[in-house]
Image (cartoon, rainbow, N blue to C red; front, side, top):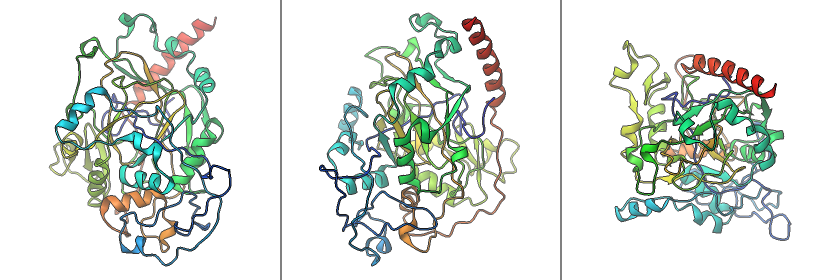
Length: 427
C-alpha cells in the first residue's frame, strides 16, 4: 500500500513528476593529502544539543549583519565533510543555449566542479540544490529495478506498448537510506543537522516514477520552453504545509536510469523557493495542495481553487528567469530545498527515465529563531535567505495534520495488479 512517508505525487498534481539536480558530493571535506582542512574562515561548527552541522559555512554569504559579522567564529581545526563535484551530473540541453540569447539567466551547473568548499555551500544557499554523484551503486539500482517492466506490463523494446507518458508506481520494498546510500545519508545530515532527521520517516522504496515520453514530442526538432511546461509544483500532497513543516525537509531524487539532456529530466526554478517561502510565511494558518496551486487551509470556498488567495505555480514560474535541466547517471542523487519549484519535462529522446522521490522528515519542525546562528541548518539558512531575514519567529496558527492523497486509491489498485503480474512472471 502507499506509505504516507513516501508520497510519490507532488503537492499540486498526482499525475506529475518530481526530480531536480547539481553537483556537490557528501564525503568528508579533506584536503588532497587526506588531512583535515584548516577552516579558520568558517563559523563555529561545534556540536550542539539541537544537532550538529558538519558542512562549513563561508564568512560572507549575504545572510545579513548577524550572520556576516558574528564574533563567535574562531580558528579551529576539525573533521569536516568534503563536497566535491563530479562530471556528467547536470547538463544544460543544447536548446537551452537559445535561452541565453533571450537574456534569461541560467544556472551553469558545471562551474560547481571547479569551486572550493565554501563556494559550494554558497551555491546551495543561492540555488537550493546539490547532487551527490554515485550516491548508491549501480548494482543496487539494477537489483531494485530488475522487474520494473513486468510491473509496468510493457515491453522495453517496443514503444507501441508504452501507453502512458508518466507513471507513479507503488512500492513493494523499502530500506533505510543509511544502509542503501550511506554517502547520501551523510549529505542529508550535513544539510539538515545530525540527530535531527527522523530515520523511521526517511526510507527509500521501489516506488519508481517513470517518464516514457510521447510520440508527439519525440525528435530533435521538438522543444518546450520551461515557462511553457504545465507541471510546475512543490512536493508534499500528504500534509498541510507551513513554513516550518517537518514532514518533507528535503526533496530527494535518486536516479535509477541515466538521464541525458532532453531525456525527461526535471527542470527546476531556484528563484521559486523565494516565492513559495513568502507565501507560506504570509499564511501561518497553513496551506493545502490543490491542482497546480496552494490554497489557505482555512478557505471557505467549496472549491479551494476558486479562492482568490491561492498561489498558482504556473503563474509564479513566469516570474523566474533562472532554470536548469537535471540530468545524471544511475546512482546520482539530487538533494533539494523542500520548497523548490520544479516540473516534469518532455522526454524528447523517449529513453525510459526512472527515478524515485522519497521525502526526508525531521524529528521536529524547522526552527528559524535559534539563539545561536551557528545552530541553523543549511536548509534553514536558505529559507531565511529567501525571506531576506536573519531570524524569524514563525509559529503556525492551526494544528498540524496529515492529508490522504487522492492518488492513494489508484496506487493501491496498481499495487495489487503489479503483484498479480509478478506472481505470474515468477511461476
